[in-house]
Image (cartoon, helix red, strand yellow):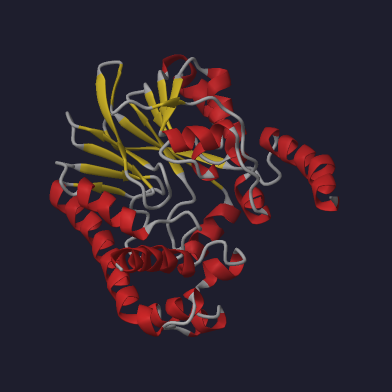
Length: 324
């Protein structure tokens, strides 16, 4: 009760004020990796430092396609910069559609800002639409790092979406989390992959990860004629062969984790024990973080290798028990 009281009367007013005037000002950088696509990066010294600790990739980025379609709206601490950018770039007049790749707060944090400034329609998977419509309470560190969740109405994305002459295929690719979407443009071969990739060997994940589903999603994306991959944490891969190698490296990593889980499952006595058998501590840093990595140590094991390992183990055990 005390915690709820403190959040409601002290922390929430601070959050609202920080969205208007950030305690540590953020800076927006607009880049055009290829003609027709603008990458929006919003960060400051704190976010850049945390990104390096977490693995070196950007905090979160958004993409605007031909001024008409916005992929993800970033984290809510960047609300002030989004208001400025939308007005400065004229996107407040030209945006027609916003697509959320998934419901994590660093990807849907400014839906309310964009909705208030544009006439764009919002689209996502059914699961994401549900989470955005009634946003859950976040762990304290995620509210501290990304800001509060915001209420928004989102429509369920059709498999084929047409916006201002652009054809976009909205493809469900669960794994990183349920209801994750990738957006593929067949006319150009562009794939906006959300958090399908992020990094080739990122093993610490949130509890909603599903390793077996992630493998199937990657296999599906590898069947598409992709020429450019736009990752939601800043990586842009250009070239069909380069994209294929990038996605294949992620697939290979997950298959290797799956193989190691299968090899160690019978002798393991708990998920933690299994995770330690699958991921041997390789550095002093990992040993100091009790074998689960610094990201797990910093987040109270909300991000953890255990979650990825458990998703594979449960699938294997269900299959085993189902056969008997």
